[in-house]
Length: 169
Image (tube, one colour):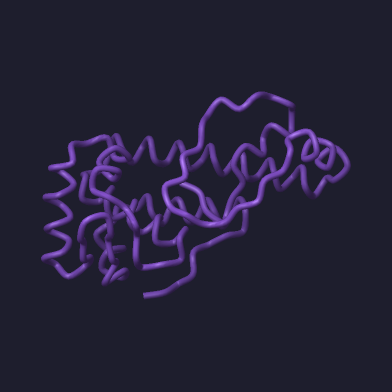
């Protein structure tokens, strides 16, 4: 999961390697693109840019490792809360244009499992969901219901790239 806090594919400028992944845009927004050859040339000329790209690559690795550990260790309700909070942070909005089907795919579970937990979170007053939209109503208590991976991921972001989500309720 990436937003305005990161770079996708920037590692290709470090060693000219080919991309091994495909990005999927789930939510509309703006972005910038640059030809990898141009970025590679700029990175060879700038220690600052090269260092920033390497830190983003390290962040991608740390995020992937943390999410893999989270998926293996934590309960679905904790993982869903983490995922909703991360999405909220990256969008900068309490309104998340996500379907339960998409959430189920991202969490590797059946949609009915997401439906049951989303219903429980809605009954607790943490979220409100309707077809294709989830509104975060109580981010503080949603954070309490999330696993510690949410804080760990944000600590990695801050340490490696100097970004932390705004502290909002």
